[in-house]
Amino acid sequence: MKKVLTLILTVLMSCVAIFAVGCAEEKSSVVDPRKGNTIVVGYTVYEPMNYTKDKVLVGFDTELAIMTFEALGYNVQFKCITWENKYIDLHEETIDCIWNGFTSNGQDTVDGVKKSRDQIVDFSYNYMQNAQCILRKSSTPAITDPAQFNGKTIAVERGSSGDALASSYKTGDVNIDISALASQMDAVTKVNEGLVDYAIVDVLLADAILAGSGYSGLVKNTGLNIAVEYYAVGFAKGSELTDKVNATLEYFAKTGYLQKLADKYNLSTSVITDFTSQK
View 1 (tube, rainbow, N blue to C red):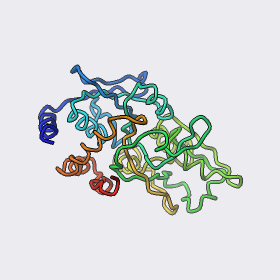
View 2: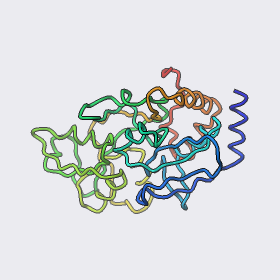
View 3: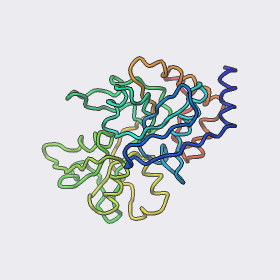
View 4: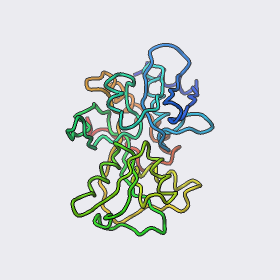
C-alpha cells in the first residue's frame, strides 16, 4: 500500500498532459510520450467521461484511468474506438480495456446471441450510476407510454444501451424508425437539427450538454420508467488487470480522490465510493 501511495503522489505532482485527436480523424490514438509498459484504453468521445478541451483529452474516466494505471506503474495510451466494435478491439488486443461510461448491467448481441455483458468481459467494480435518457425538442410531444413511439424516429449510438432500449420499444404494434449512428453525440446532433424526433443517450451525457450552450432547444423527456445502469471498466476475460484496478479504486475511494474527481465533473451524486457490496 505504501508503494501505491508513493506512486499516486508522484503522478499527482507530474500532471501528465494527454493530447487528443478526434475519432473522426482516422481513429488516431494518443500516446504518453514516455516509454515502458503501456496500457491502451479504448474510449469514445463522451462528455463528461472522455472528451477534448483545448485539444487535450479530459473527463472523469480519462483522469481516473490515467491516475489508476500510472499508480500501477503503467504508461497510458488512449485509442478512440468505434463502440460497436469494442469487443473485437478488446479480444484482438488492440486495446487492454474499455473505460468509457461502459454499462456493466447491459446486454449485447454477439454472433447472433444476446448475452449479458458480464458474460462477454470481466468488469471492475461499478463506480458510477447512470440511466438512459430520451432527448427531444421542447416542441416535440412528450412520451409517457412506449406505444406513443409508434411512427416516430429515434437516434441512438450503434451497439449502445440506448440502442438496446430503443429496440425494446419496437414491437409488433409499435413501428419505430431507429437511426443507429457512430456516437451518442451524433444522435444528439440529429435530434437537435430536427432530423429525428428523439434521441436516447446516457443521462450523464444529456446533463452535460444541456448545461452548456448550443442545445437550448432540447429537453429531457420524463414520464417513462427507465432502469438504473452502472458504469465499470471492461477487460478481457481472465485479465489480471481487473483485480489491480479494483484495489486502486478502493484506495482512491478511501483517500477521497474518487469523490473529489466526481465533484470536479459535476458527478457528485452519481459516483459510487463504497464497494463493500460488490466484493
